[in-house]
Image (cartoon, rainbow, N blue to C red):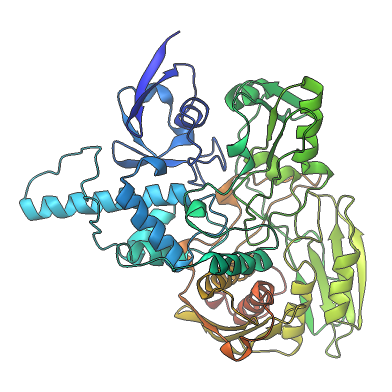
Length: 560
């Protein structure tokens, strides 16, 4: 068998020449799990970024055959002191929530730091810097990285949790930031704040930054068979992911030319407020995965949350845990079930689109688009809890499955409509969540967004701030630019990470978070949903109450 020899984190490995990509070699041959598969082989999410001879490369689109003799450095192989500095910085700012994207981002930013240091050396000496694979920074060197430079680097990545700002702060402050000194009780409090904000299991600590939070695709037994959808309603089984996808005939998803538009029209009527929302993609980066041994319990696909609560309990369409158990029992050996990015978009639950018309007295009609067999009752109840005088009608639509489990589905839309009825200014929006958390927007524009949150006991100010900034990003992005094109047959057409319209790091204004300590002795309550709804309402107000989302641009650029 022909082999390709390369060095991974200081050790030489031999990779079969037929191995398609560096990501396949890292995960299936070298056993490296810090390089994640969030979209392969699209090369768009950045989760598999590593350093090749010191320069960042997206592993899922880097052919193994071109790497003979090259030096590969993953997050695990960074100089220990450099890795410590990055971990300290990310923990200090709350720059890692689920942690799936973090190792790739750190590798990208470390490569940026190396490039910056080399450029500084060249300018200082007047000679070309040597392109050594070893880190020219030294263990503690930290050349100043500016926010605009970091933003450009982050354009190659997606983080659905943090809203980017805390990542930028970590990079700019590298070497000067110190992680919170949390004892066991403080870690428990920090994790609890993360759990109530994220809506599922969530841990806090250095293992999260390292991408070692127990993701199912990383923890399967060695040699477990791989099961993937075959595209025709069945499943394909093979020894490796690359072989399974090849056998299944997987076709790489593309970005469509179809315009993402609301699937429902606002009912006819003399309305004071009109709004129709579009399909959007939760875009959690850890694609659905599970594994199971014969007769065992399958690994959870919700190991560490993610995507601002976008990862929810499975429906029939994406129940990878059930499939893992069935195939393990059928084959009599361990299996791991892995969805591709395209599978997630087609099968994953979506926020139900709505079309609403409201009169000035608060009466009106709200149409809720619904697809699949999930229970729509919670969505109806949430809408009526905010807008008691509206008639809510469920309208079957052709499209991906909808779910009431997505962050505040129905409630957030109703809150936004209530703010519109009051014609509230963007910098005066005040929203109280179902659990009592309050978000007040006091400044909103390209110069910055200021939000004050009342969340009871903060538990951990760093974690709370991180989730608030993530919620601001999610709310602004939802209104301004997010949309998922779905054709007349209900099939999603936008299948790539960059086709979802999620705002980039450079597009989010500086967010200032003030925590209300007057309620610090009250029980802790989640506030992210209130921040999400308040930001969406402020964005809609700033955009002039346009009758359909997405607006197509940031709201301060499109007001009539």
